[in-house]
Image (cartoon, rainbow, N blue to C red; front, side, top):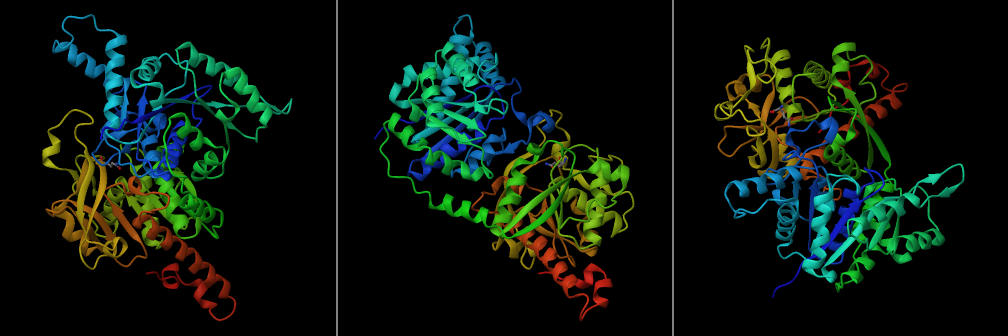
Length: 562
Ligand code: GLN
């Protein structure tokens, strides 16, 4: 039977960073809790074809999908909040739209017509949106940017037309705005919301539901006022009060009646939502008993958005172990300039995440050495694995000058190098190993115990690889393969013997971690960090009595793990 997909369009007003992505993800989660199937789409107004070549300082993390698309970080929220598996189709940019339109024009597909924003660009956008539905009950579409920007106009025009194309009962517009609180007058101000709703009306869209970000609770009177000026009913004004933990948002939205309103307006018949999993998770988050600190040594440390999925994966691994995870971001260049100092004194674990380019590399290698020698749990992700290999090669295997050819093309020991087939490709963005690859985990390895299985699938985004020519000498130094490609040619994980927890992986496990399904590597890593902390503390607590001498021994002799 043909079933039409219902579309929910989410726009944002007043200012950016209000949490449109999280709102879209939370709405999708609520629809799933009602037994509906969902998909999500992010439309980005910039001209880049994808965020792959953009500086993480400006744009935050690049999220990689199963099929290897380099996408906006909001797709990470979408996957973490729902069961939807997203692909290339779930994120597009103005650049991609124009690229497609120009290619069609060159092929003569417009039959001599003057190619224009309306209808050619808007049709291209509408087709992509329509194709997305593909039989799911609800498609949630987030329009990037803020209403009033020049760049998002074609997107707004396309979604305006879709209500007429698909029928009003199949399309819903939700607008996210801000209600600033004025300390001086002690009140919440509604004018910016009124203006942004008006700006949306000027392009022909009347918002059906307003989600209003607010620091404080808002009264019924405020909702009535907004409703009156913005042409909605008071129950269509949803207060989105600040929350401590983003995973509370679906529950808060539900309390405000948002999901009920959506299904009413879209005329969808569903069961009552089953929120028990979200409630249980939220309770768990509130009752975390322990606290650990992880030092993250990277280059993009000023913008935490650059490591969005990583932060969430660490958080989830923490919740899984009943512990809060504090993140201490350390700029790797500062290690090069100032030395290690006391930077790691409060770290229960050290992690080097993914990254590109040579800046700060030596600082990262120093951090690895510190973790290895002091038996601090070390987790190296992608570049973090590569620097771990370099460190062990140089300082354990005595391969002087060992490096990755990314940082030293003339190194005498290229322990990390580019595979032959990739060397010929010049186009930036074309040389990467992207998306899901299978990995086989050898029996008897630490990784096998952690995953509890022998074959896994993980997502990649990198150019360089472990150089197999050095596998033997590195193994003699204690660095063993913890995972290999099925043909045995690529080393996907390494693990260090005689260390409580020292693992590097060439893929990005953080992309596959969910709040309630913590990734095995992260769960295990956090456990190791917590054990270290508890072990150290209990030894110190006992120190004055029976084992006074013990307190002076090296940490390696005091604390053994796993
Ligand atoms: N720069 C390294 C490479 O291209 C690592 C990439 C990453 O960490 N994602 O292989």
